[in-house]
Structures are given as C-alpha cells and as structure tokens.
Length: 184
Image (cartoon, rainbow, N blue to C red; front, top):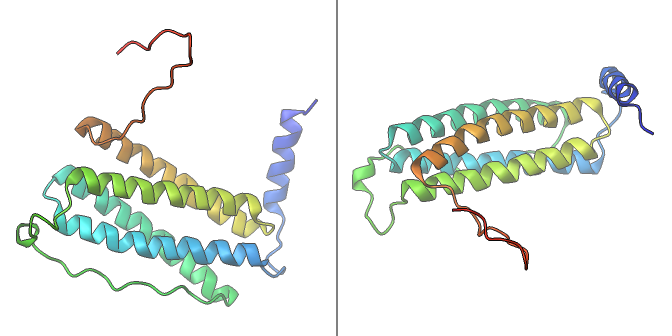
C-alpha cells in the first residue's frame, strides 16, 4: 500500500533537486514552444474581445487575462531565450478600436467572447498539465505547474462570471437507462 506521507516527502525532495545543467529533452522544448504559441494567439483574441465588448465585468476579466498572459509570456520567453529555444512566430497586436464602429455581422457577442476565452484557457491548462507531467527537469515541471495553477485560479473567476450571465454552455445531463430523470 502507498504511504501518502512518504510520497509527499519524495515529491518535495525531487523539487529541490537542481538539474538545470541537464539539457532539455525534445518534449520539454516542444511544450514550451506550443504553450508560448498558445499564449500569443490568446493575446490577440483577448485584444479583440476588449475592442468589442462594452460589458465592464467582461472587460475586467479580459484585462485580468491579459495581465496573466503577459506575465506568463515574459517568463516563458525569457526561459526559452536562456535555453536557446527558437521562439514561435507571434501575431501582431490588435489596434485599439471603438466597439460601436464594428459592423453587426462581424461583432462578436459577449457570450461568444467569454466562451472562446474559456476554450483557450482550457487548452492552456491541459497543455500545462501535460508539460508538467512529461518534464524531466524540475525547473521546467515547476514552471508549468505554476502556469497551470494560475490559469485554474483565473478560470474559476471566468466561470463564475459566465454562470452569472448565463453564458456557460452545459452539455445535456446523462441519465442512464432505467434511472430517474434529474430534478430541474
């Protein structure tokens, strides 16, 4: 049987191992590259959302994502430069525009902006989780654990706003054959 305390102690010991002298393996490099590319794409999407929405709470959550994304981008950018990893191409920033000048056939609704942001956050959380578990170097693993924790904390605030506004998409409830229907 697994002793939980021994497992926790072993995990803590492994986090103190300094293995920065080891080269990165191709999986760690790929994880850094893809995560940074995802952050870059999410940035322009958030900028477009800020240009589009007039909802103050959605603007605040988008600005919070922009700050978190900037922080993670800088941290990962600096790490990749230090390790000699080629950076992914980044799209140009969106120019600031007036939401009233966007034609209705092009303007995204607040619901779409929030759900698109949610999908981007989910994909980055999943990428960070995979990268953390596949990393051999402790510093890389911890970097992605940090990114995942930050995105998870942010995602709960986004989900709260989406529930409050009725923007969250809920799949149909699963009711196995022969069981009672869930209460509405």
